[in-house]
Length: 193
Image 1 (cartoon, rainbow, N blue to C red):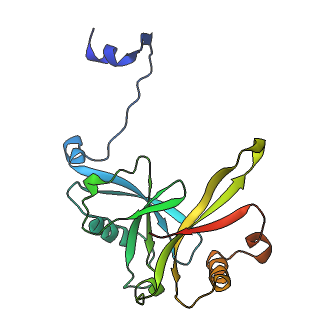
Image 2 (image 1 turned 120 degrees about the horizontal axis):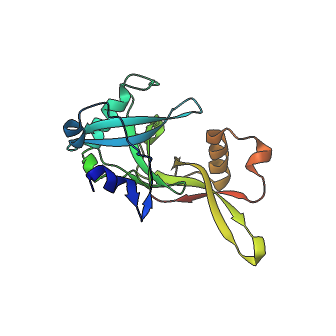
Image 3 (image 1 turned 135 degrees about the vertical axis):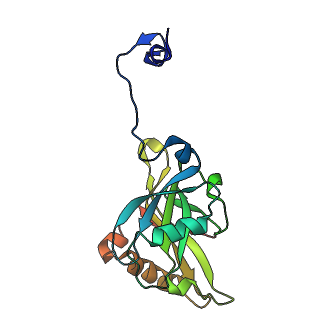
């Protein structure tokens, strides 16, 4: 039995369908590259665009960001980006610029790139940068389940701020009307990075 026949036999079931992929570059060259799918979140537009970044395996996160800058619309020329790992609607990691991309796995986690807001660049000694995510409690069948949803984000907390002031800034950042922001069953949770 030849190699092709072996490919068409799977778990003792014969198939006459052969699946293949047409490569846009030679296979030896492709094997030396790492392909990452990066979700770019625009700073001022409510849109997310998925970009395929293909670079040599020894490239760094900084190289990914530089490649992405040439593909997207920037809010200003000197903008700084960050690359995040997001899983189950929560931020798990900000990748260091010098991290090698061959160590990054985008199979189960979402890679998200975004501009770093100016207010987050010059934090004072008592300012905190926290992660905020959306969640909803489901109390069906006498069991409480928490379901995350939406896009997580960062928020700067200042030492003198009250909780009420922080809530107003979260609502402004999300651009959510009053009735939706205070809707029962939904909440916004914060946790330190």
